[in-house]
Image 1: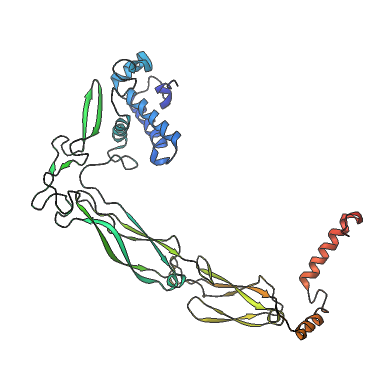
Image 2: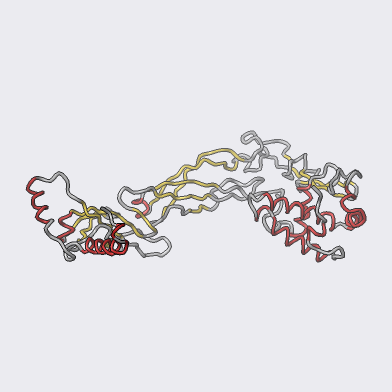
Length: 384
């Protein structure tokens, strides 16, 4: 597949000056950077294409060669078919260009620096019950993690010694090599990018500066916490390398399902069975509340399945709105009696004599709709 013209890739004219060229590259690099397009293979290829074009056009000698011979300037001439030279690594050069244009840190973190590095963050998943979420609690957790080696204080060097600056890379962790008019940068093979060399490793940690331990931590779970919320413990993550600061520990809370209550934010919902006679005549039922108490709910005369009754301030406390509490909604379902005695069945048959809109408003309304539907269909379409 033939390569696109480098000027076309960057969207600039052939006579573009250095400032406009840099501006065009900057916009495209930000647009297609992998950190901005995670998992997008097409964007990654475009980012490489943009970087390759800028690598050539930003260098006066390479640009002059490209303007005269096109892509052929880098073929069969000791450049290995690539503008990066024989054995050159495009990834290293792209990163070098990106750092030059956007600064040492770049807009998304830049390249890895040598010297002290911040430790990684840790995640801990914690399950609690709905009752525990209602009251809040102090929880003790055990977190397996790497901690700084005490004898060497995290340096990796044996007590009484310290890491030395790598003479090959001067402590930068990367070295540059000149190949023709191309400059390539690679990870230092002596210090493996750390910028330091440990002549005498610590016997406890083997020169890593870290050892594995299980730590016991106290965590305060606030009242009203919801599933998916996270609690941050600053400085309780992995220790940094080369004496860098610790990362953080994030505790992700999961509230397990309850047998009675369902939750939606600060509000609670439950379904309560209502005897048929109570639903018809009215009365009271007793339901539990999340705080362990009981509440009596008045059932209005003629109550139907699906009706919801609201109990104010009987829900969950709100973490975000301090001092506010949600409500408890009780959804009724009318329970049809079973295993009736002959006498009870007889009484129900007498009850069946009750008819009309006053006794069965829903049924009368439904039957009215059916009559209107059948009446508009024609006699030939009526069911037999």
